[in-house]
Image 1 (cartoon, rainbow, N blue to C red):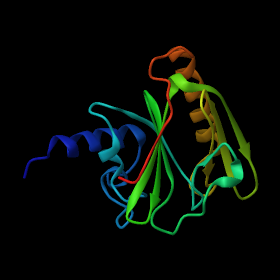
Image 2 (image 1 turned 90 degrees about the vertical axis):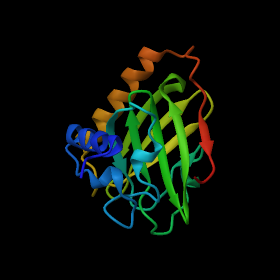
Image 3 (image 1 turned 120 degrees about the vertical axis):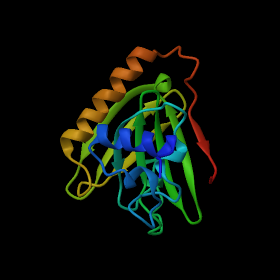
Image 4 (image 1 turned 180 degrees about the horizontal axis):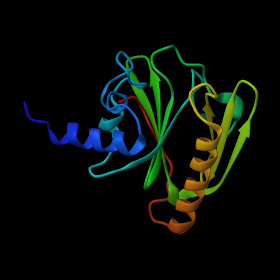
Length: 171
């Protein structure tokens, strides 16, 4: 049985991330963290640089306290690619998608508490509060992800044509 292009691509991405391929190709019912496999949300040839997860608290927009606690239908997942931050919030039967292009990012700050970590991403349109689970992520990885976002935002510049945040309904 031959591998499909999607399976081959997922295998290559997983190897680069030092992750199991199933993390990208399965839903939360398997080894994945979202309703739809992460690989299905990527554009063709889009590479993943970091994957961060939260336990149950969803992304909060503008008010850090506004993030909902999600039912245990997977885990809020943040995928950093070469062009955007993709927030995937499992929500019942589907996933709510947040897309933050690097061209809209003005600043990023990390906050490390005892039980919860938070990455605040300030953009042209909103402030996003990404809740991150200390049990599933390394502090060094979260700091490296912040540095990566800032570096990509600097390259894109504030006048980038791809600088509009986008919040999509369930997919």
